[in-house]
Length: 156
Image 1 (cartoon, rainbow, N blue to C red):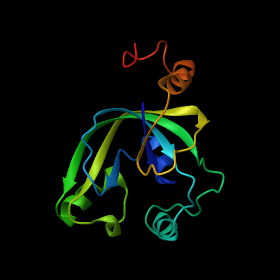
Image 2 (tube, one colour):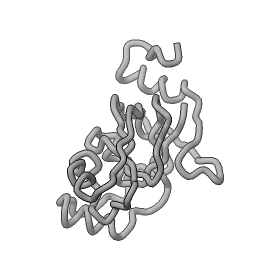
Image 3 (cartoon, one colour):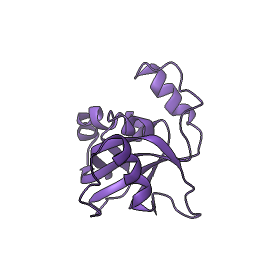
Image 4 (cartoon, helix red, strand yellow):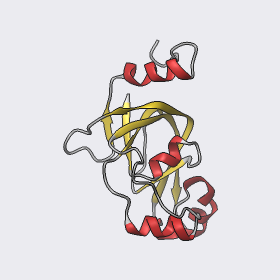
């Protein structure tokens, strides 16, 4: 399974099903299951300010999962943002401030998001920026234990 790296606190919002779109500078031609990896990096200052002033989150907890696989999702679509107006129209999907808009950026659409009850420690290989791979069974065993009655047909 592919692993998609997302910086915190955005990864937590994806895992909770609040954020259903990730903003990237490139198109994603891949469609299918991905594990959501919360990167080890600290929360950026401008994101803390945005969370406080716009989203009403006073403080982002330091204990938030970092360096772990925290969710399973499927990438089902991408949307190209050609104008700031179109970017703003999807703000309830990506929850990003207008300062994230760059001409020609893309929104990678997530669906069927499942939060992992036991985040899995994971280390991205050196040189990987967005993508890596992980053994499917490590993800599906957690999902099967807590959410599914059987393993999804994706790997059967």
